Image 1: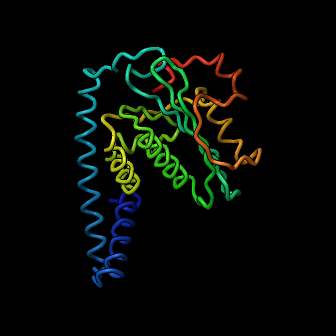
Image 2: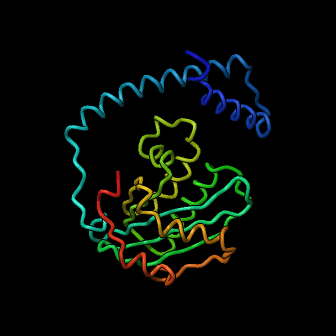
Image 3: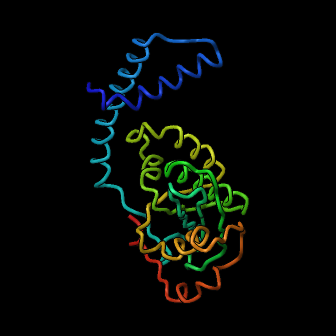
Length: 234
């Protein structure tokens, strides 16, 4: 097996070996670390082959549940999540917007984060913030929608994203608080308003964090014309 196929597990075991040395005074030999990584990679690729066959079989049988115009069933809440991050700026903007089953905006929140070094770290931080916010608002059934394709797929199909197992574990632990939940990938067209609010942190210097009912009044025009349809998801 080539190194390019093993490196995620190799990095993981090197990290574990480092922590074991620092906190437990245990240190494995380099050849043992490499062997563990190769064994784990072999098992994962075998499991992926089996999973892919199962998915091909299930794909014929599984159908998406019927949803109404807003994209969520009755008693559910749609939570749209977005961010505006740049590696050249220490500040990033984040936003979530909740809607009911009729597409009406219930609440929205904007927050400024600082010191986020990578886009991956930014995505995780924003998702965890949105999840915590929904818990604080006592939401029970939530569909989280974002453009964070890698994290969304890593949650749904973790076997395909072994390098994101830390992020998956963090998110799954927090999501257990809900009665039921979904993570969906939204198309960029449905995130215009989300993007405007997130961009206001860096572009307009609006760094004050807040939670408010409804949508921002300066976006009245957009929301009066917005139509959320089920084909906004994929």
